[in-house]
Picture (spheres, helix red, strand yellow):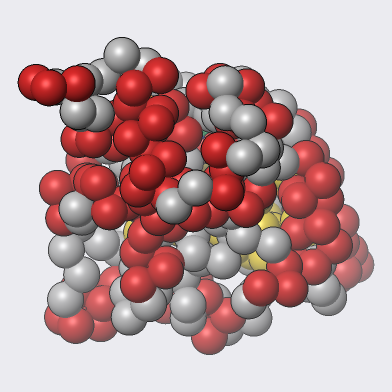
Length: 289
Ligand code: G4P
């Protein structure tokens, strides 16, 4: 489990993080924002546009291997705008990462050309990575910099003593990512971060969380979910708590008297969702924001 999950955000931390990011932004030409493709709304920092003062941005829709392909395509279209490139990636396997540098080249082409006109033959463009905890920032940095260096910052903001990694000729990334806060004043956001494991289970009621996840899974009706637990269409019309009981029984999770072991089933359901065993599932679509 990732220790960045332990970050507690207080106003003081946020102010410090903001200041540090503002400082680091002065050193970079572009920002790479990493979000979770399964929850592209909930895994975004709410102040990202203001924080990055409209620097050219690459949005990396990470963990695409666990997200629904059609939903990811919709997100790519929805998030693309001037000065923003959107790339689906899977940092665990490395899929899609080779498009990062070409996207930067394209995004920064005017700037690179301007340097060249001024006589600088090989200008170096610098990029910083930002994102909320657990979206895959350190996995991305380790992969792109082709080094097995653990680059996770275990506290908000970017640690001092900046180091730069070359990712390609003329492109460098800051070794430590900017760790940003999620939107906390929204219960739905908190729940979705908990479904994906970005927020620790201990701070949420696990059974309630499993029931809320089932609410969504019943709506989505992903075949892999029904098949895994051998659920009929009629089963999917049950109240989520009862459905959780049925799932428990189907898995042989019973306690004294044959009652379903709801707690065990809740842990199992969340684990299986987090491991994408219930299918490739995206919980948020563009028009829902
Ligand atoms: P962070 O720096 O943004 O906090 O995130 P980090 O890279 O630590 O990644 C958080 C978790 O997400 C890690 O799993 C990592 O392996 C996983 N991850 C990152 N990118 C991808 C991806 O594209 N696909 C999938 N499926 N997983 C990804 P972990 O369980 O915390 O650690 P580990 O079991 O991998 O060691």
